View 1 (cartoon, rainbow, N blue to C red):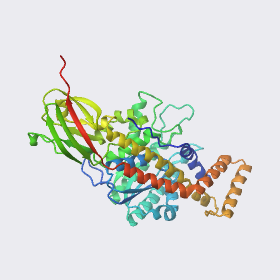
View 2 (view 1 turned 90 degrees about the vertical axis):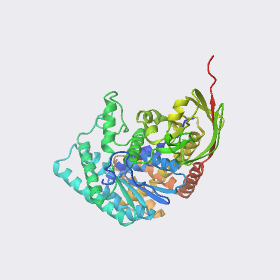
View 3 (view 1 turned 135 degrees about the vertical axis):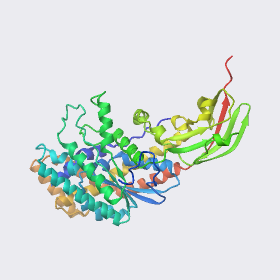
View 4 (view 1 turned 30 degrees about the vertical axis):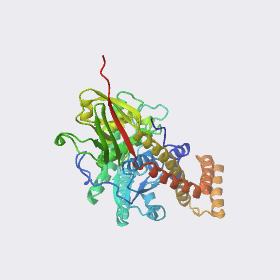
Length: 478
């Protein structure tokens, strides 16, 4: 069984395209080699604030990471809030800190900004800016980002700083020729982030270079390949998956779902069980039966990302659900879990260990996929609700009241009507989006209740279950 959940709704995609335009109108701890021991990013009872611009606003990377935590640590409650807003710079983010970020009281905060501080908006529509403007933009970015990090730390959050993601200026896309000069500024922003993290002793995750390297490698074989949408700025689901993978890799997340190891006649030769409880082991001439309750689930990779996940070695790197059965007589054995045939393996393969996460038919994978469907629906609501703070900020930036009174609505409606009369760019689109904002506002309480109910259901669906394993010898061929 494979999962069929996707993460980008049509409304979210429109905000990705238009949100930044709307607003334009008015590592020391992770320096060790991959796999080194590290404190867990999330602890029981944590509150994770995900701060950023449009790449976070409707960005599936945070949902993939939340789903990873949900399936890997179902006993560890984690509250999360999407605090990304389309179009935001570090300065814009500081401007909404008191009313949008601080009220969540994050104990962990991830921060990813820079595309709007140093990226495409600085180079359009007039082309590359001069060195003095670039220097000023970098200085402003560093100063505002430093202030944001310090405020979060002062408010008690453990902060993890993420680099900007790259602008894809190399994918072949005749409909949208690339703009020169953006990636050097984003690379400079990545260096600023690394320096700020080092100065403060904060974890740092570099998304820029790994994504750029992977894209260039694939484009050498397929010039149209991209981890980024046709606008060359916003990652597509595969790009967000790579972002999540890099976060896990660079924060040294545990690769182990569980290690199911049956007792051996030579205990010193076998690994020890991990993150599971094994009971009722019975060996017969026909094979072995036992029960096992694993404390985690494998990560459910969505269908559209399965090939990429395989190419990147995701299952071996972060989805190790190992079954080790020593001391079986030579031959082949059929593995069944809860009566469902899963695979056939030799005694030698079972003694070395097989990764159950690689077999879609396991009940553990089916359970994880069900959790993924619930998380997909939750995150779609989370993304939709982000239009409320975005529209509040948009109004404030255009000197309009931010309350929900009829008078405030009337004043803003009049402003948009004047834009349409003056034939300003995208005025008609803003009027349509303003109607969608009002519709979301009217449903906000019901949407929040549904979001929270889905979170509760997903956590309940992720709770450990006991399964019955059977290994039956396959009769030798005549």
